[in-house]
Length: 95
Image (tube, rainbow, N blue to C red; front, side, top):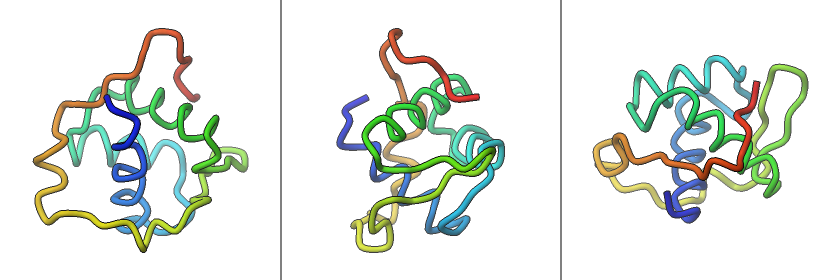
């Protein structure tokens, strides 16, 4: 996955579920509802976002650290990214 898509995926998540989201709810929403990728890949995506300070983590909650409500999202965002989340093998999934 191109890292430019990470803010788009996160913007979609935070716009739908609010600025603070339980980790398990985020994984379930992005993986099963939006079908962006398998849960392990979504967890890796969240790890990449955390390492790049796009999100912060408070226990089992992730918090947006960017202006997600200003990011442009096309109306077909879920369809455009469906099944495309692939993060390199050197990133550990967030649990």
